[in-house]
Length: 260
Image (cartoon, rainbow, N blue to C red; front, side, top):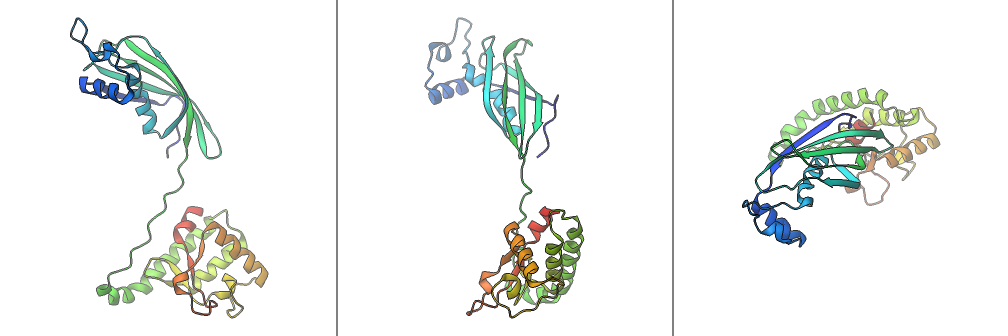
């Protein structure tokens, strides 16, 4: 999401047809005579709130959620008149997960006369990094090709994630050590994820596996708990053995990329 900037201007042009006006009358129940019968010049007048949909369209382009909207209806609008709505960002304050934004807007008719103006206050939420879809497993007929290519694919993925680790400022040194262990011993799965088989100690299920990271067991456990909460490590439940002690761990590469 691009941050809104003070002074930013948005524009939108459109004309409302007679069918638009009649449809709006049916939708809202506002069937005032002046909206359904032509005047002495053969014109059909649009509803004020139909005209007000112009600035709401501009807000929608920015995913703006309004808290209040103020309108001044200065001149009538008739069917088939092309209107120009010009919106301007008057205020944009960055908050924890959003921007608090104030817009002003002016709508003019083909003669350049202002038919409506107003302002609105609301928020725009910042988007989280989109989650990438996991790589689809290769078709069964290509399994031999996948197996032959797996070492190269694993090496490329490990190199990429290893380069991201120093940039992941939110990770503790213990977490980084655990992830380096996974990158050293993990295998590249058909779902595009790194998996570490028999990683029971780091998952907390048993004491049958000795990790190669230079950390005391309690520090390893604490680091793994943090990584699990962050969503970086996940149990590969489909690969748990009957006894429940020999559990594979999946390193979610997409979450690690987001942390970096």
